[in-house]
Amino acid sequence: MKKRSIVYLFLFAIIGMVLYAFFIEPKRIVTHHYTVGTNDGQKPVKIVQLSDIHIQENYSTTQLEKIVTKVNNEQPDIILFTGDLFDNYAKYGPTEEVITALDRLSAPLGKYAVWGNHDYGGGAAHAYPEILAASGFQLLENSGVNVPLSNGKSVYIGGLDDSMLGNSLIEETLAGRQSDYTILMSHEPDKADDVLDHDIQLILAGHSHGGQVKLPFFTIKNALAEKYYDGFYSLPNETNLYVNTGLGTTKIPARFRVPPEIAVFDLYV
Image (cartoon, rainbow, N blue to C red; front, side):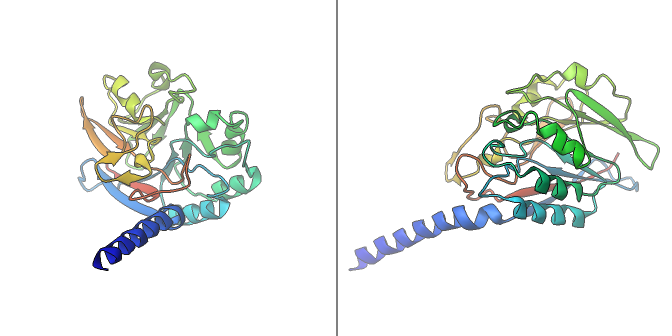
């Protein structure tokens, strides 16, 4: 009888974890705060990074509205989106609702985005630039912008094209750089190893979903997110890489021990 009770408890635990992974954790949004640089009394630049929203029937614009509200509550100076807006645009792509939601995101120093692999696939390639432009985002495709700060310095924000389905070119991306500090957006984090000799202080990436379902002693990894897949990494040449674990899901609508993430950086330049 005791053995049977243990079996029942085990089965109930498994069922509970499955229900949590499919119906609870994917709808959570965790906000992580970080400090980057040295605080010498100057005012920090507040940067919010979003990644891998993967809008789909299981992650609709209702959830996107929750993201927008949480981001605006942080009062960011800059918003950076590191790709994968829709999961499969051809299957589910409520364009106007997404534009309305993204347009509500407020950042006085600008909203910037790069391509992700899903932004090229699923028929999204023609719509993604138009949606971003209509919602106030500047799409950086092997290009960048020098953002002036209130302390007289500036930050260069560069954006690589997607490294899987696009054509990422680091020299073109940094060609217009005239700033004291460089932030590089790259959808795929493992691309970081190819740009370490370009004097880049901070690389922001996504794509990995942090494994999306993290089991003991086992983490699922994506192509070009096998070496770097979760959180901060200190790389050579004083380069820091941050891999955002994303907000949505792909392949299966589940997350386990990797809740949807908004990353907030207080950057001291």
